[in-house]
Image 1 (spheres, rainbow, N blue to C red):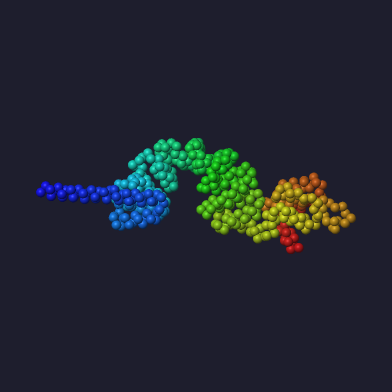
Image 2 (image 1 turned 180 degrees about the vertical axis):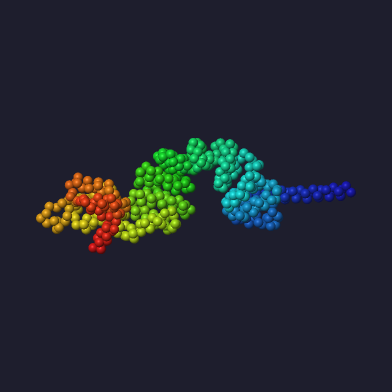
Length: 453
């Protein structure tokens, strides 16, 4: 009798041992091999093997965790979320990770799917378990910042820094928030500490540049923007702000170069920044009378967004110039070609050029005299011709100065040429003096006659 009981007991223990062995050791070892396979990057085979195990042996928490990891690494975040949630629903402790690891993977997938509220719920649970974990605190702060809940964002950023005083990202976010709140001293302090902790914190460099630009320390601002432009995230913004700094410094060529760099570097994802940069470049061209160049930028903006700011009104305003190829050539031709246009204009007016000087790309001074065939037996009188290339309506002061220059050069007459119509006071002044004003439609007519001859 005792022998039989002993045999039965031994058999039960043996079966229990086999159950524990297969349940706790053999199966996890097989899953461990698949885990190693996943970490080596073999995702497809791992998914196939895991699905087979789950189908034949049932879905353990470890098997579902590994399947979730496969989906996450394959960027199939929706399926990964299902598997992570199933792991948490089982309420069993996995062998290959921890419940914290499961929840962290779930948070990453939820954030990738822009399910911020769900991610926040999981992060709050993680933070409840580890209230001084700076990783969780900062992730919570970023979600609140994204939701424009700045009070909560600042609270969790402060907690992040208390947990880790060298957390440079939290410092840079606080600096950015202080900048927008116009708390200048606090912003500078946070951002300076951020770049001290990490010299590659490009967000901090960018906002330091904004702070110094607002304070009109443009040289220092440019230095910080140059540091921030090494980041793809801030590159276009940095070019845009540097262009504005150079514009304020009246270094127009440098400003144009920075705007052009921003336009060239923009991608499809940065359309708003591209439009703004093109708009600022057009504004700069227009303010300097480079109307054809400005129109080129406005037309580019119009192709992307036909209702952007006042661009439709600008294009309507300069419709005639856009349609006049002769005037466009006058405005944008390279200097050697433009020089030929100047010679043709002077010749059309009945004069021979004796001297020509390009004061700027946009201003040409010419000394001329009537053609010999028109002045037989009469002393040829010199004429001073000034040709402006910029599309700016010239006023009284310019015309007065031109007449003084003509007298200094002992010229009996002055001629001023401009692509834009002259202001009324300038026209009135010229009526009783030896100065001829040729602008706007008059110039367009001359250019058309030259082209047709």
